[in-house]
Image (cartoon, rainbow over all chains, first blue to last red; front, side, top):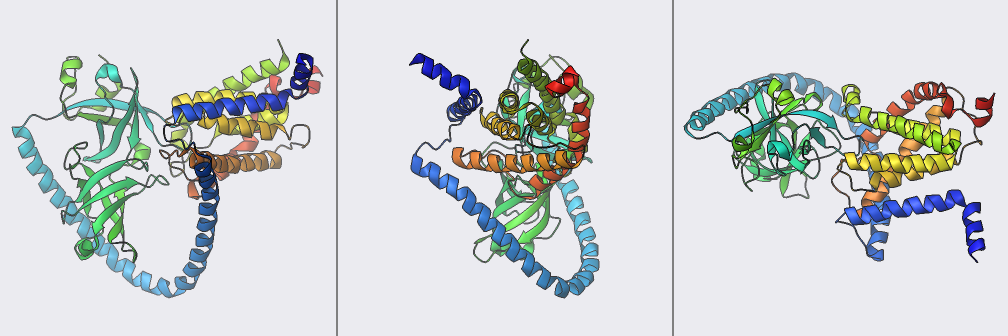
Length: 307
Length: 171
């Protein structure tokens, strides 16, 4: 009998190896993934659901494409006329938003000077995900430098501070950031102009935009393209008033009670090199060395600082 | 040393270099945030050249390495790359790999397969923390990117003696 078994293995060495490797991978997946669905019925549902979503998306794509072609000619003339006007208005709106933001920033800095600023840890982005399927960023600071999971991460680009995301996992000398555009990243937000609240969620498909949801439809007339979206501070994870992005598109879907607003992040993630971790609990100063960065440390700090 | 073992070691070194490049240097050449998957091209090349056994073992170990580096659950990339390595290896000896067209076709199919497997695994295991982009714009950018780079990488790997077919190596 053992000879028969060994004979089978030697005859089907390649297939047996495949089965073993797949089995090991599946065991790893089940053990390491808490959200795993173990019931056969639900596994089947997930499996068929994948194809159903794919087919539905494909049909919708064809339908939308056909509809778009029909509307294209009619919309072209209208678009040309509107584009010129929109560009002028957009420029003016951006200038107003920028002035408003500067005003708010100056006011905040005035308040800020009267209270202790939260400690910040400067870090350099050293790597990104190896694959295009996930979207984490790796930085060169870890628990040894006082980094903890959940810490908000900001960056400065073009004299503007913007939210990058939050710390997802921490190693001794490196950490991973869950960026704003990841579908798992949820940030309570507020429209800077109208003060309407909503929830910003990454779309995952593109670095260029995130989605602002749950803003009531009644606010549509008051919202302008280019309006600034900032963190609301609700939930306690992200400090209030950090810039998230500017409104790029507003959709009022008939079957939804709230608006779906496309927001262009103020941070260009493709150009991200240095980030700053906000330590709301303020114990970084105790851990960091004498050269600990201030509220706005330089990139040199991020690259070199190591306690 | 067993020849397959030697090839697997060299493959793993090549895959590790590719994975490190993908997470660092290749961000500079990303198109809309999408980088080419050099590790996939190397895996397809080695599997087609050396067969399923080398392909699946190399894919599994490289996938585990990737899982450690990423936020993905352990087993995600290993399962995906094991299957791609095995299926690519089935073509070994059955297709003539010309310098240009075949590398492109094989890599394009492997990238689409990768997107398909990623979607299936994420659906079954409820993995939601990724920008899952199965059959959306980002996947097709990667398909095109990998397809364009494949002939060059295949040509480069052809120069490495250990990857050559056994009969050619003896000659």
